[in-house]
Image 1 (cartoon, helix red, strand yellow):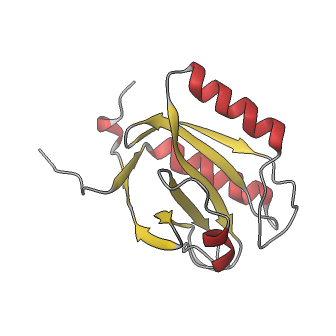
Image 2 (cartoon, rainbow, N blue to C red):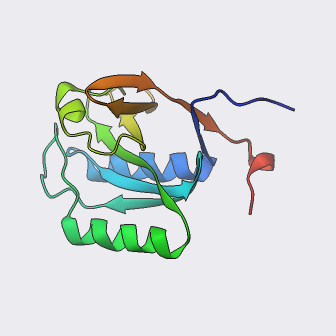
Length: 146
């Protein structure tokens, strides 16, 4: 039996793939979305349109965000994470990301699409301007629950 780090967010491989695919499809702009789930486990990815159409910032389209939040609630889940992409920047919160972090209990997942490198993901909690690393645990296919 393996033990999980105290601060970890568990994702299935398809969740990682969905976020990376969304980030690539939104390129050259940042992608953004919500992660629904229970406790520390993602059960669903909710890609959202970025109304900013910008390569260094994002703002989820309000109605799409409300719709996703209602669906998360209807499923009996909660928002466990918020993701967005960085175009040609590391998977680490920028000063703008820190300033815009309004959900201290959610994990902020950043997908980095730095040119010439494979996509990279980073997970963080941002509370009162402080950044805390959160491990992203990718389940092996035989661990994924149905």
